[in-house]
Amino acid sequence: MTDISATHIVPPRSVADRSARTRLAYLDGWRGLSIALVLIGHFFPVAGINLGVLGVEFFFVLSGRLMAEILFVERYPLKKFFKRRFSRIYPALLVFVIVSMIALSGTFVAFKWKAALTALTFTYNYAGILVNRAGALDHIWSLCVEEHAYIILAAISALVASRSRVIPLLLVLAVLAMANGAVSYWFLHMDYETTYWRTDVHIASILLSAAICLLKTDGKLPALLKGPYVAVAAAIAAVLLFMDPVPTPIHYLVAVPLLALAVNALDFSTRLFSGLLSSWPMATLGLWSYSLYLWQQPFYKFVYERGSDPWLMLAGVFACALCSYYVIERPSREWLNRNW
Image (tube, rainbow, N blue to C red; front, top):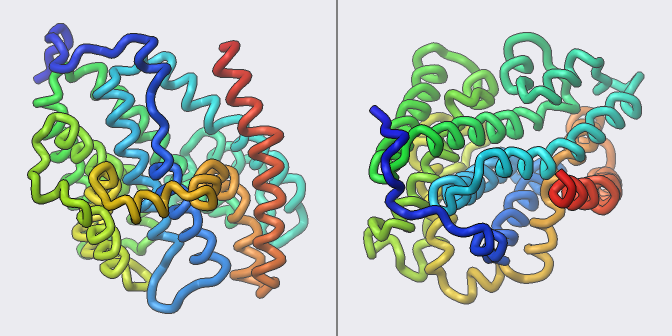
């Protein structure tokens, strides 16, 4: 099925080219929009739509696009890829889990070392639904899905040399994952979290976006989908399709492909939309997004289950997240990338 020795359709870029990889501000802004949706959905929920769930989908489709560019277009060395993923994610996660376990001790969201271990080994998305939940760590399920996706996509990039084979493989795996979610929810009657926390279901968002990214890169994306208003129209349609407090498979079967198209069509979008995403507030939120996502969960639990003041809790989120970003996340990433 695979031909490891076959020549790549697109030759690997040089180290100099890879180091000069352009950072697109509107993608930071898309990430900022993602975390804004999560924060609004958790601290100031809007009736009739779960903005927290929607924000995670925005994250996933962006991740799929970026991983496709790094692994299949740039052919980034896998050893370096995983080192950079580790430096990006693990130091801040480790500090969050340890500090939370100590600081929340004795509260209604306290958790012990076994739960902490599932978070730190990226198994919480299964352990949380099969073994034991820890409310302050519930958001780690999405990090687990993303980490598992890194491994799967990296394995595909190593084993399948031709992008003409990669694209259909990604699409087939995405369809199987979406079908798995539909069967689990509709026919096996699993609840929402038991269905959509699982990597074997939720990886569809990342795989779909990666496939569309490669179609775009290879010039196979239809011209109709490259219009200046495609990104904003697809994103708005996806948001409207998620108008349900508890999304069902139909939302994922229709809305997620639209979001995957939207994040990839940003390259062709109007200056108004890309400019809005590139603005300082949105791009800055995007830079802080990982730390904000880590730290919002315990504060959200106090709002959701204890009725605490959402503005006060949100201030706590930003205080902890900014400390995490400037003291832990950015310095550790820079140090590890420079010295490892």
